[in-house]
Image (cartoon, rainbow, N blue to C red; front, side, top):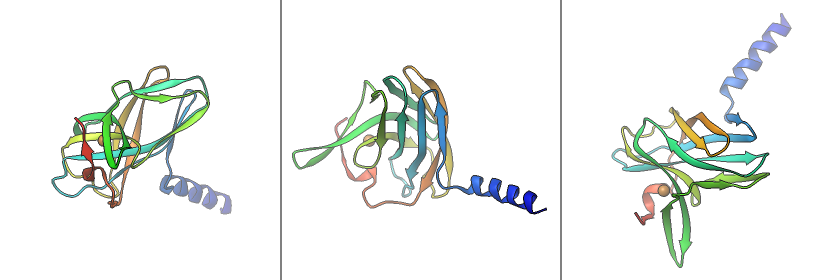
Amino acid sequence: MKKILCGLMFSLLSLCAMAHEYNLGALHIVHPWARATPPGAPAAGAFFSIENKGEADRLVAASAAVADAVELHEMRMEGNVMRMNKLDHGIELPANSTVELKPGSLHIMFFGLKAPFKEGDRFPLKLRFEKAGEVTVDVVVEGMGSNGPAGHAHTH
Ligand SMILES: [Cu+2]
């Protein structure tokens, strides 16, 4: 009986775990998340880290049904101005390295949200890599942050 209970507890815990991750070949994708958006927000960002345990690869595209367009972006300081650029050549994943998509840096950008992102929601995001192929991950929507993607300049 005790064994069965532990087994049950373990599966419940795994389901409830905050972190979720995916493997695709040599790539390990950890905890895709997005910020909740206020009503009427035109855009949103999503973030995760990618551990590449193999040869160099590249994240070339992302797609999701929750928005009209999904782009790969980078934010960086140019002088005193934080700028956001679309990465037409994708996001490089050097061999045996970890690349982090995070606020203020590399991110997935959603334009034309079909509905606001609500805290606790999840939605599928399909990622396409040059060598590893495709994987669909679940993006978990977390609370609204103070430096969300709505607050910085677009260059496109
Ligand atoms: Cu962006």
